[in-house]
Amino acid sequence: MIVIGQMTFAYYIIRLYGSSVLQGNLEGWNAMTSHGYVPSDLMGNIVFGAHIFFAAVITIGGPIQLLPQIRARIPRFHRINGRLYIGSAFLISLAGLYLAWIRGAAGGLTGSIFITINALIILTCAYFAIRYAIQRNLEIHRQWAIRLFLAMSGVWFFRVFLMLWLVIHQAPVGFDPETFQGPFLNALSMFVYILPQVFAQIYFRAKATLSTKFKIVASVGLISLTLGIIVGVFGATMGLWLPVL
Ligand code: HEM
Image 1: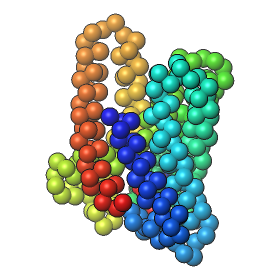
Image 2: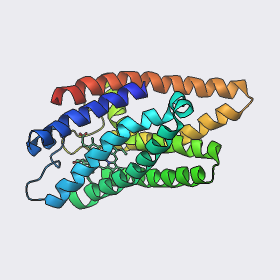
Image 3: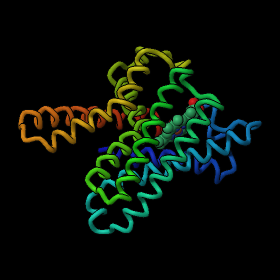
């Protein structure tokens, strides 16, 4: 489900931002944010363009990296794509920090603090994923790679669970759609940027444990999240991504 949903997000990124560049219409970058293309801010536009470029690279590269068939059949691809993915993780986070703190973004100070926590988690997971790959400690490398993938998917989870919330309530409940701030968005940020790291820990433990009860509880949790993701991906595709293409 995540592979399908992230490929849809990648399609949106390439179609919206890539086509605007090819058509020489950079104003098209402002379809989803007022901070995309700002005529007087060359540096900011370059950083935003780079951020979007790496967003496309990682949104396509990430899910492919986790497919066991690719790892087993074309390990060389896994190594090249892995280097690209981790390099992009560093660059997208640094570009994102510039956008959040120097250029200014929707969501105000609280939004910037949460996305910064996301960037720090990404940088930490990327560091350990490389470290254990170099040490050839593949089991621990795999765990850090999964944590990294979840952290890198944070902004995607944000959009998916926001749309799930809107599908359920049919109205912006718990936040102000003008300022893009409010208690619901703070709770959502914690849920999508921080809690996936806890879920990953539960998942690793559930795989290792002999307790059937623990495995069942973890599986029910994972299935519930997946059901939420299915509805959220549908909501994000129909409500966020397709309408601007
Ligand atoms: C790692 C995966 C990430 C992806 C795939 C991603 C993707 C995107 C996309 C597609 C946009 C354009 C808005 C839209 O079309 O929805 C965007 C904007 C932005 N991103 Fe990221 N991003 C990621 C990580 C980050 C991180 C870690 C930060 C901060 C440290 C960040 C900060 C921003 C900011 C500030 C904007 C501008 C939003 C605005 O103008 O209000 N992003 N990102």
